[in-house]
Amino acid sequence: MTGTFPNISISTERLVLRPLDEDDVPALAEMMNDEQVGAWTDVPQPYSEEQARGWITRYAPTEREAGRGLDFAVTEFLTQRLVGIVQLAKTNWHVRSTELSYIIAPWARGEGYASEAALATAQWLFTDQKFERIELRTAADNTASQQVAQKIGCISEGVLRNACIAHVRAVDGTWSDVRTDFIVWSLLPEDLDGAGDQLADSDGFTTYSDWN
Image (cartoon, rainbow, N blue to C red; front, side, top):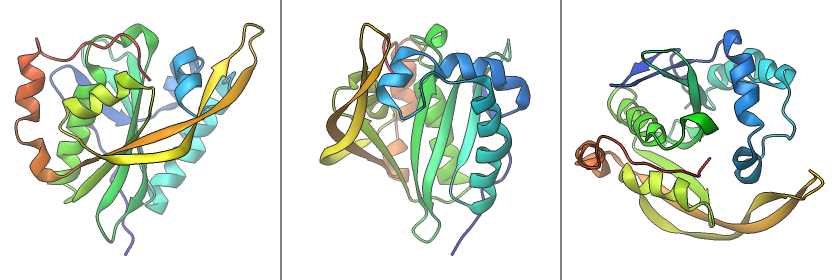
């Protein structure tokens, strides 16, 4: 059984999650060239505006139409500025599960946007889309991303040993691969109970200074 995600927008108190648009190209390229993004993701470095345009106009629509995933542009409600990306991938419509990941621009970190956007996406998946499982995978050393997973109510299921490739940039600017472990997290509908209250109890949203 294969489905397709709708082309929709999700609003929170501070954010709007919407489809990527070609107007996002400059901000998306700038965000992807950040060192933390290069370290913890497989985004090519350096990342050009042409690559950003290809993601927005070709890759994202194809993934959605094929039912494999969905890409949200995360923007500030008041300024409409692009603060990050939430991505759904490896979607299995038979078991109603998908893998969630997030990236936040360097200037927007420390505001709890990752937790807010991820939680809103999870709530939408479980209520409107009737999903039963969301999976996250975080590199073993990416503690800040792990904190986001914990904050929205995810449960750690175990470690995939040596299954992740992180990246280290040398003084001369070149990147090299470093193997590490993946920590696997899951989120089920019942895990969301109290997750919003937990975010609110921490002065609105959690503050993280260094994560992807």
